[in-house]
Image (cartoon, rainbow, N blue to C red; front, side, top):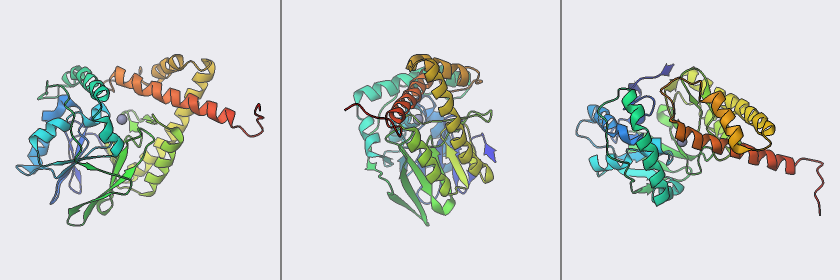
Length: 312
Ligand SMILES: [Zn+2]
């Protein structure tokens, strides 16, 4: 099943705030949050989380990666629940302490206010993004015990961003994959998310598919369950493969001009997509990166092609 609304999904897992830019809540003896969405929606998340937890506080906030629409409300949450431990990878912690990164996250969040208004979401938070101190670092395989047999296992999946962590809850077969898998834009098209390394992204998809999650939580738009979760994993790989081929064609036609190829990708992928969708500035930043990484990969494969003789 594809679930495109907020509320209870199954096994104590909730989507809060907005299905488009969700914060996931897993309730239990020690409730936990995954990701912190956008700054403008901070109060929407808090209201939905409080509706479930009442006066209880989340024990942890697990961050998947330090993109503006995944850490936006982290500082706001820490003010609401000061005892909550914020967890990220070591590279994620470093990004969230860098002034340049914080300024970019603040700008991209400010640019998203109008989109939230257009969607009619309330109440909106007008305050700018505030960064957050990371209390605990997750490495590959780190486990966090929540009691009642629930363990959160962190998995380093650096194909989307270098700091990327997925979170796997084996006893509930829930995978917080975020953008380690593609995001269905609501039309059935799955946007590939490899910003760092296509081959690593594909290898991560293979590893994550082996977990055989029953409840798959991508970064945006929907939660997918059962056979649809398995299908989403397969289609993520399929669309990434096709996307790579398309970008390679555009790059060849443009003689390696990254900006020209990026404009063609945007015309084919983003322009026809109905609103609400990823804001244009954030889309272009990410897409230029996907195109650049594809070009670097093409160059590498050409230089290392079998039979090629190198000048001595
Ligand atoms: Zn991202």
